[in-house]
Length: 68
Picture 1: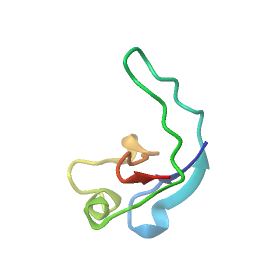
Picture 2: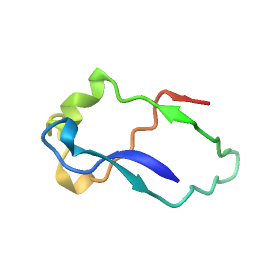
Picture 3: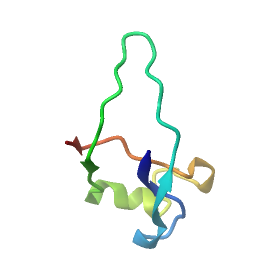
Picture 4: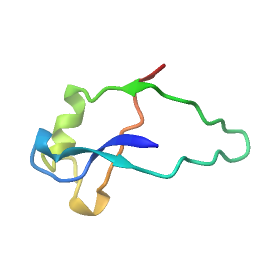
């Protein structure tokens, strides 16, 4: 699957489309096909390295606001 991931800290240039393995749902979970998702203003502090978000957390894919 393709995902817009935070791959570097510093700002919007740290967002990159990457290929990931499709997740396998566990018991009581479901996989959902998502056509699009947004990056919102609350994500900016993560890109800037705030909230104790560090390079060791990269790449990071937000799981919010999916559609499709």
